[in-house]
Length: 292
Ligand code: 3HC
Image 1: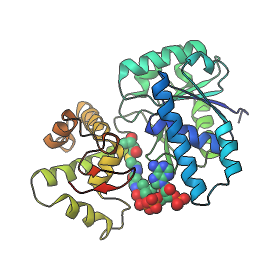
Image 2: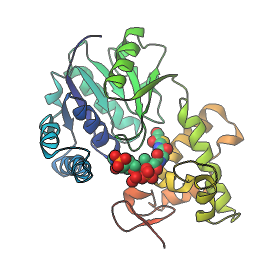
Image 3: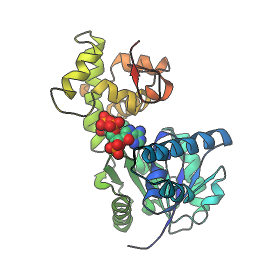
């Protein structure tokens, strides 16, 4: 694999900040870019909190924390990605935003730089077509929480060069992840299975067949999954779940992929889960679901 160590991460929200942390922990030099100073400060605080938690738990020393933080530069200027060897975009799931980012990355980054998108619901092929280097555009789809979940999907389009897929899978391994190569179809592999399951759980709740606690307990205690589907929906973000359902529906037109009306209404109401403090549960503290 070609040796490189400079990685650009565009967007430092929940996923982007986690992705920047993962790369920095693995020894890469990371430039994290946000749209303005306030967003940058939130992204930086997210990384700092996560590393401080690891120190509190004795998983990192204070010196390792400093070293890892020292590997990340924070910027509001995408031009600072001019020497990035590998770039990951993790901005919100809107094609207009992706278009803007990829036009800039294509212009700013050296011609050999692989441009990866963390999209969970948009077409990687369509994003690749926005650039002059579709052979070097790939999906690198992380799972929430990015520092914890081992799985990454490496999404190859019809235009992606085999070498781009190979290098990206190798990068995923270097950051301690398990890459699974998937084709560019709605939901790729994991979300096409996972999100309809979450949606079914919303539907069960909506029809008052069980309480949210019963639904969540049924699959955690009794089926051994780490989290119930409604708790997971709150973690992933209800807007993200809805976006995935809508692309599955648009692509396959199967009744399996019709979004539960309640999911759509909750998104309309701004109850997006943990990130807005309220989804199926209400969040008082940083990580604790609180009863309504
Ligand atoms: N950031 C960093 N680390 C975190 C974290 C976060 N947001 N949340 C939890 N962790 C760490 C904890 O610090 C702890 O680390 P340690 O073992 O080193 O002490 C470890 O994860 C376990 O956490 P906890 O003990 O607090 O709690 P749990 O054992 O309940 O684990 C969980 C939490 C890892 C989130 C677990 O419940 C889980 O695996 N849930 C399922 C998550 C999942 O399925 N994610 C995929 C969603 S789909 C997706 O993201 C794709 C998108 O496109 C829709």
